Length: 308
Image 1 (cartoon, rainbow, N blue to C red):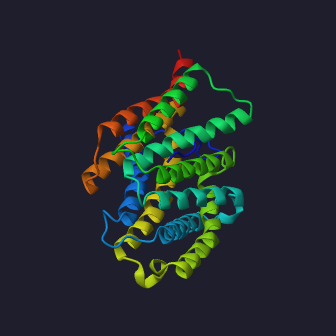
Image 2 (tube, helix red, strand yellow):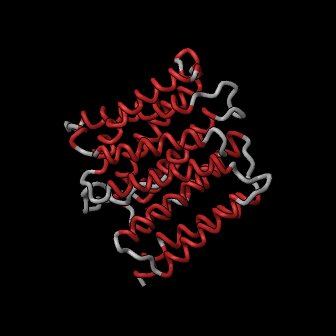
Image 3 (cartoon, helix red, strand yellow):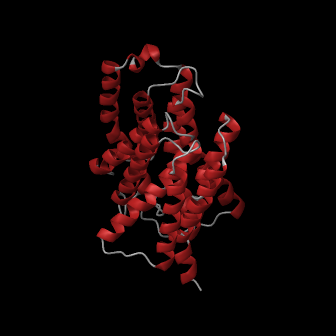
């Protein structure tokens, strides 16, 4: 999952120990990766004897994140609904809903890689519509990342399901749209809180829909492990993860912020292998190298070349 590289409207970087910055950055990347791991564990039949309904998971994640961010904003004396927008909230909710439905069948690592490419594709299209044409390094990176995605999805025994991959690609596009909505939008943490709070009515509707059309959507059928994963994904991995990220961005340059986010799919894949016995096949590893290398060329490399 990619988050914008500006912490609100702050322009002054405060001093901090490099060790502290490294530790906080590592924690944030682990929290971002945890979103995929928690979702996969809660929803996949192969990982959980009683998987949670994906609609319920989405709703609980949104509500718990909104509650945590509301508490944080109220402690600061602000009104969360003054920031954010309904357009951004719809994009955010679309990201979470597609994310949950796709991870019923996708491995954690493959899903994280597809989202990474989808975000870049969405941002590219938005940039072209704004008249921002990619340079040579960006074009190389986009081509390399797309080639990695095509290789990952080529038919074969170890290819992820096409339907689930398409849904999580839509999740990444929704995240790209959410990022675009937030460009230049003032205080990023306050906007995130406002957007999540606006997702709560949508989450309630989704819960009602799940209860009406699926027995697994009824509270009596909610497994405690799945509920715990959804609440942790919302209150910790999403809410606290985003708040910490916006704080860390004060100490990171744009290339650094872009590069460190490349670690999220790798952490996710390793976590899936270690915690859920998911396979790190050759296809996934080769695709990861191509996709992450392409994203590096498209995001960080142009900034590094300008410094020379």
